[in-house]
Image 1 (cartoon, rainbow, N blue to C red):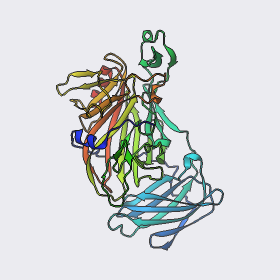
Image 2 (cartoon, rainbow, N blue to C red):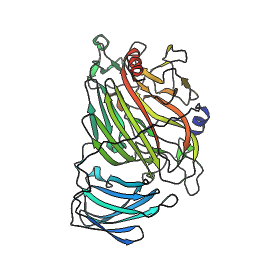
Image 3 (cartoon, helix red, strand yellow):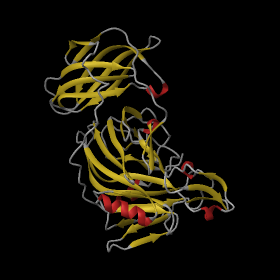
Length: 447
């Protein structure tokens, strides 16, 4: 359960600040299957911002609310579970007129079902929420997919892990002949047949993303304040840890909650309620992370969004946008320096031991490859040119599925901004595969 990260105080001191440019758009493709047009439920006001739900019993694992409000709101939904026990769970709403919110119920991935919605109540969180209007409610019984959901095209196959907050957990190159195998006791990822002479355990479906635990993956993670009234800090690696929503889960492999999922042939939209990294499994954060993953040509595109409802005091911190962990056999770091020259660094070590080295790039990308001429994976971030990188347990992967092992190579696009509640934040990134030259050409075509 290693999460080979950073000692927080040193991390903040070492990372170069950068300007953050939020996206100018945010959109989610619609799904007519989930609507309020023919809802069998009615809402009756039973108190200030409290409503009883009337309607026939119906098996459901997903619910929706249509509402209008001028401020941020905490909601509570009570319902009866199959078997008769009552359940209650909280959710959070952003301001707007005629807005729609959808969510799976708690435990949906473990096949929990509700049979009768009971009531809704709402509490203002920021300023005056005005006259809260609950317009409609509906409930649905959705098919639950497996642990991972995938999209693919002729070049790439990408997967997200629903148990780990919809973080990117799988990326496979489909047209480069990539294979993973063990040679001389070490994991190797390569495309040439000659390299696998004498190898053992050939794997032809190679996941390039490290998915050893909830702290790896390619995912959103945000650092808030450390000193917060009423907040009891956890500890990670002996360090008093700040408020830290992490898409995948917490340091104990506790799972974040999947809130919503929409799929099409070439897109996956996920929404999750992340865990607080250093705290126990009861400490799910009052925040939401959203992501839209899509494939276009030779690259994967991820659009990310985060909003926090905690009301905690704000803090200016360096952030990982995103945190990117790939399979360790790709351990030669590659980047275009400020002069536009391609630099190869086969000597990187565990980033805290190296003092958190930052690399300034001229083209906003960097990558890890298997040697200078080998296969690799790269990260492009239009918003920033500074990267933190390192390798943990270099050369110690020893199976034909290095994506599941403890050793890992790590990149983070590092940027500094104010972590602030009730203030949505958005950014995007791209991932490409191939040789360093192929990765560079893909990213330059995106620019």
